[in-house]
Image (cartoon, rainbow, N blue to C red; front, top):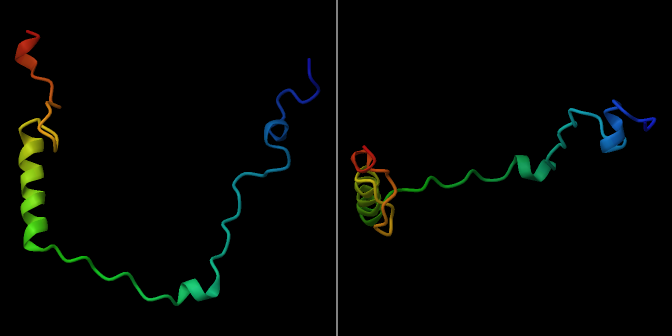
Length: 73
């Protein structure tokens, strides 16, 4: 038997859990907020189309994704 059996430090060396979270640099804290993405008419159309595809059990490329239950009964 090894002498480190059952010792949690044996695997990870000196790493203690939980690790302290590193502080972000000060200049990151005052960065400008991300601009809110606005949905254009084209985006809305694509999104609606994708939702309809998914509801029909198809993915974006028209491939079957939903398993049709009646085929296996």
